Image 1 (cartoon, rainbow, N blue to C red):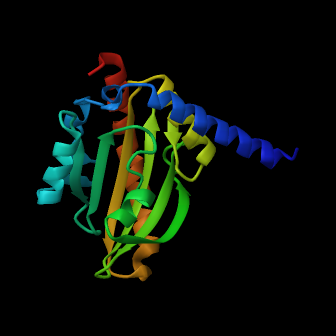
Image 2: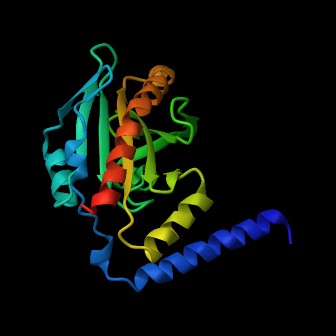
Length: 217
């Protein structure tokens, strides 16, 4: 049997076992309630953040309650502000590639980028368009106690879903950063800005994830 066939069989087995294990566990075991993200800093290097206030933002906060989430706009005073979303959730949940179409956004482009400042950090990048021609460039990943998980690496994603199913309560955060675009000509600058921003965001994410592990809160 060729190597690629074995890899696909392993992937399918992991997904199947994870789904079966998850189905046997009660749902309340999968509802993260950590409040550590409430102390995520408003100042990150040259960026200053402000809380997003809207009906959608309030709905997101209620959805994750009683857990705290980060939902802010960060600006360095020069470039387009970045909307930062961080929430405690299972790896693979509420993936932008899955949720965007349900919210009326079409996926126009997908790619992967490395963050030079953080050795293990890879960003999944996606460009989405709304029905009224809004364009948004987003970069995202899941930070877990074992490291970074990316949707662009399905084997790693599936294995962490299995970990979540067999070891409920293990914390993980989804980190998502988005910039609104005027048109496709701004994308290169947007990716550079998001990569730079991720370099100052992730150390704080790792710190708070470790605190969640140590305190259980």
